[in-house]
Length: 278
Ligand code: AG3
Image (cartoon, rainbow, N blue to C red; front, side, top):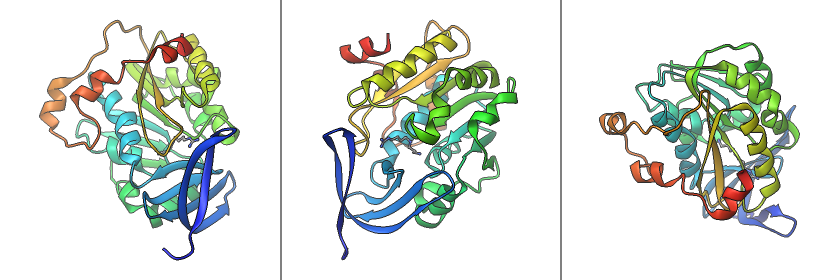
């Protein structure tokens, strides 16, 4: 790398993550500032409005957790809706499951997909899968008129500010719940309990108002604000959370992060997180 500069994202007012980078591109789409960098330590790094979305080195952690966990929790998942996820990593992992017959991916910003297709082939590699329908539309609008269409809805969004905000409202959650079939599960990325506890409390307050059962699980993607949470929301009240161990064994897929122990252990929450989401 020759023209190295420093890129930082601040996770709080005075603490954050820093990479030595070589800028590849940066431009404003209709929706947001898209930037791509090369890094020695993490391969390609994609940011939207200055926030880290993915790095080639650790995207597998987040993408495993936002996909395989709901897919093996659902008893018979066939049709999936992904909202956001323009880099393609979530679609790539969902489509590894032979049980999944059809995926609608609704990404608001076509430019993110263009950048991913050109520069992030290891993430965008499944975007031409014939089971995937890709729409460049607003996910908030998409769910408004959908009734009982999806087994799983995955919200792979940016933070709850600017264009991301609409995907964290009670109205959106209500419409998304209606778009779920019986037995349906919605999962969203629900931010960092350590860096933005107020966001996390707010998200769970709304999720709990809409869904009869909401469970939180966690993992750590080092390029993101410390420790990351996900909200697993059930359309119907669900007392014991299923883990389809036999499908997991039959499919025999190899994941770099996710496995049976991670699935079970991810729901173990630190006390301060339990308090936040109560
Ligand atoms: N989606 C969640 C990223 C949120 C990160 N927030 C931040 N860096 N402040 C990432 C998209 C991956 N497909």
